[in-house]
Image 1: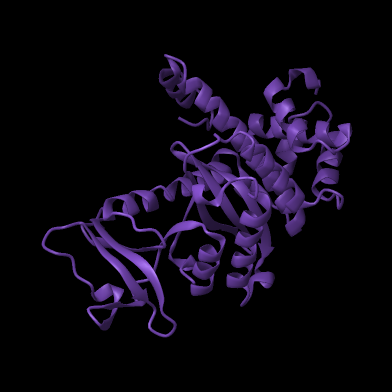
Image 2: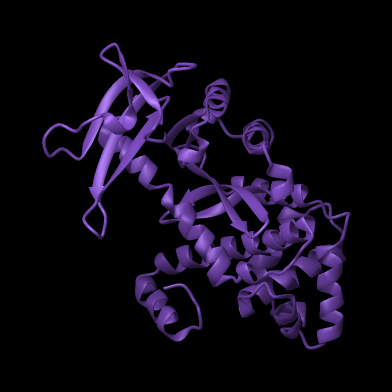
Length: 336
């Protein structure tokens, strides 16, 4: 493939992400990301068939995925650095923390909310054997590295982190307080809080009348080793008419409406995971080596950011929404 056919913005982005890499490495990543955007599949054979010389492309892709000099964490940090450089100089920055998995391979991802989607900002890959009885510790190590090293140039008061109930770990909450990072995290209904001088399970707390949200103020959280947090509850009926309840804790005093709104934005990262796995075909990657699997995800993260940039530019045009809808109807697997 002739590199002149690759969009200029993609070339500029890869050059910014990997300024210290030699030209051949950068050219390989540029071409592989362009191929991924075109075929929308992480199947190695499918990617290689995009190029004129299938055998040469297969070897080049294999060398990239298994190159020990291309450190997966370094790629993730470089991607985060390039993304941070594009952020506005002030205003809130919303991060969502979550896991996504394929069989025995797992990615812990901090996603940055941009509009109605969240794009991967920084990630780490783990095998199930690494996580056994170590998941909580690795989550804390990930967050410490994220805020103290990767996001060091950005004031921490600007961040608001949201996460699902599996992250409502006391040690993780203590770390976020230590780092000065605001959070809204869902917690389990079986945990206890101290209300009116009595320890009660969250699931036993009632709403007043027909209210959908309730702010309980600052309460003691977990009976065995109490912490002071702000507690909000919200409820809504699902498609079957059953009540679903969120128990949200935070280290910021937010109104019930604001806390629920902030946590609701967490689901943009689920949309981002779906885009990675379905739109760009990361689910089709069959790579047993965890480091090679992480390098493939780096291509996916870069491609997703490029697509998001294209979408923003299209929406800025007067006919942008109509154009995106037409692409959704006519394009194979294109986002609508």
